[in-house]
Image (cartoon, rainbow, N blue to C red):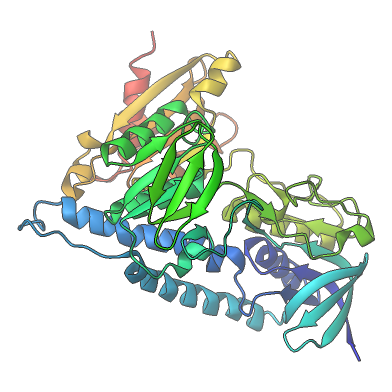
Length: 466
């Protein structure tokens, strides 16, 4: 017989969105049940996405740094590691993250049900446990935070041992000499950096006409050039006709008539919301063709008592934003009001080698909107800290209004870009005239630092005014 439980709120999923919602609810005194289909908390972010890929990237970037530094590279022999070897570091980080996040739930008295959740009605969830026992949980409000998984076209045989997606690539046991990455979005570009940093030949197949077209074009061009300069072969405007898996290799047949052969392929072209098994239609919620849910500004779905946060809702599909979405949904459940919203300018961090990070408008957007702006630039190769560290590839670009000096956009390419961007973001968020590029001229930075790039870029931009 099923066991029955009653709570104030149910959260489905323990990724950033689910964690933000659960912690926000329980801190306000709600009795919360959390459901996780995997055997550990953390969601896709911790186990297959953000954490492992960034841990892999960090290890590879240090290997690249050592091999490029003349102080360490004293012989012809370079430091070499394989993908399976660097996975061990990622596994350690995943373990630490999982333990830490489990402690959050434990010390806040959140009950976790490990099993598969599906809706019975608007306030009732069925959980099928690993031993096939069933729990029935009811609550006034339910938060869907089930995340997303890699899109898998039916025509591609993902059971083949040489065909991977961004989840299963973490199970790679051999050390490929040549890899095809199909899809040049954020995930594809990050893994192109990782594998090329390991000395693996990379064919990056892009279905569009340039890399990461949502970025400021100069940043996109910088990444493209850096890939080219490091031996990544980029094939733009290409789509696959079929993917042929052989015993020890893969051949991608492109619609253009070309064929590309490699040891294996990473298919990284799109993601799908994890809604298929939730029985949402029974409560009147209908995901779109990508499995994503429609929400309003406080993360209500079409049903008033059911909320959705994180990747299952689509854009911006960022772990950082998902946590805030969960927190905002929790506040709406507790207070019944919309007391907070996501900030307008959410920073983007792309962990290629080097990193890219941006916040605010691009040059292309400002030009299209006919906003009179100017540009301030700082090249990392001119910064003492970058010269000392031997990390002089990259630049910082500030876009600001010609008349008001208001900062409109910040774009950074280079080591620590995802950290550097937050300095400018903090000034952009200032109100009542506090957002001005002149701040960077009138303040004093530690020397030598990478942050000094702001002063250099601000002076460069102001010198363009007349």
